[in-house]
Length: 603
Image (cartoon, rainbow, N blue to C red; front, side, top):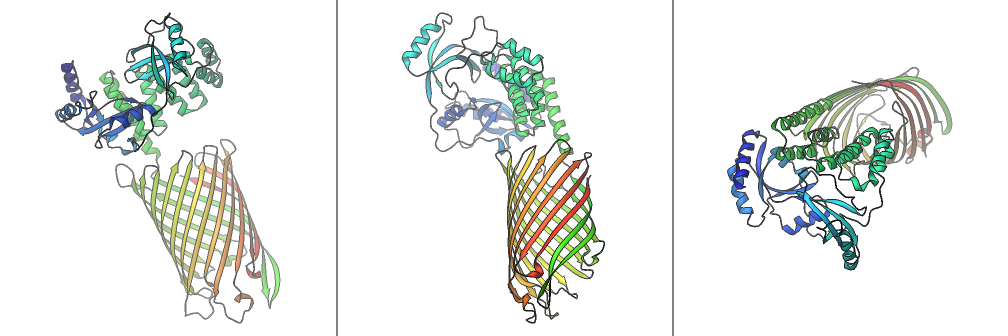
């Protein structure tokens, strides 16, 4: 037998590509709580890594280019780990730290219960149909290269022995044993007949068919049942459940090339690159032909290239809208407050360009230069026409589900016809995903504003800010909560005698956002912002007593947007923005309403 294994691995080594290496696999444990417990008891060497390969925990040691070196390590490890054997593995998979399983420092043993084992067989062979009916309280359990049919989870040995006498009539090889409760939790209800499940599937009642398959425990060991289950989940559009069904089918029939191919395609479609690599690793050890192995590898590399193409390296967004602005503001003439109503039409355009450049092959380190050009033109109040240009460069590092970013930007603004403003900004951002649908973003900001002296503005300011953004994102809806803090400190420009601003202010704000897809083409976006600002160190001339007061603003803003998707790139929208600023100074107290329609085009 040893000669056979040596010959086998020599043959494999001839076909192995440069991406593969030899490693020593110590054992193979079912990827459950009890499997993890057995590995914890085995005291796996720290130099070895534990992988989750096709629902099995497999400790592997080393990654050697030469078979002889792996064989030497195998002999050394077999003194303590008798099942240790040399296998081949993809280097990319072995070096991928995301696939490692870490053992806890302490682990409690899973609970056991008394059970009956009717029979045990080699699961690498195709399972034959049972000659006698399997009792309803029994189920098939997987153990490394074998499967066993076990029944019941009894509270006492007395009940276990009574059950043993009952099963002995039809199953002479039945024996008492113990089973982890996590594997076999109590008795199983009587299922429906498999034919009825097939009939439901044929009638295209896929939701009912899935419920039927779930209850049909008696036929869980039937390969065709799992295939029909997977096809039912596909019709329902539930890819994760479809994957689980195909995984069960491949476990029952490891020689099924079509199932392995389908499973590999689903892994890649569902962005499970690490799991797809582990499947290829299993295929390399399987009895598939060399041609089939090469075809599966070709599918993997082809899908990866396709995925890279879908990850757009550049983005061009054009946003244009026309709207109507009404503003009710308070003014003060000689201490007498007067409310004035301003109405105006406006047109705004925004062009944003960005480009993503990867620096490493792992695509974890990249830079993202961007350019934003914005213009806002009013029909009547041309004093507030604005032209804005921003150039930015983001340095990004992606680690697992987290993204670290350092934004650097320079902005130039021309407004109030003749005043110029230059803004330099930097900061640090951290984004991460957790529990599948949840996300968190933390950002800090530092900016410098440099005003070019003109008739109205003559001061410089530094700003410091920090904000956090938490969200839950699903296919149908998005919910976000943002908390922000900003502090700005201004310095007087001595060239002007009457600067019209405050030296510093603090601002606290909260933003609530909900986004909901009505259907494939329509969606609603609702935002609510509440902001409190405190202004200190008034630097107005003492001649204006009203302006010498310390200012405090409470601003509320609500934005409702209705989007309609006309094509993959073109989106039209209508928007309502309601703003109310309640200030202790009449000159800063106003309410504003904006109504607009526009379009957004993304290349």
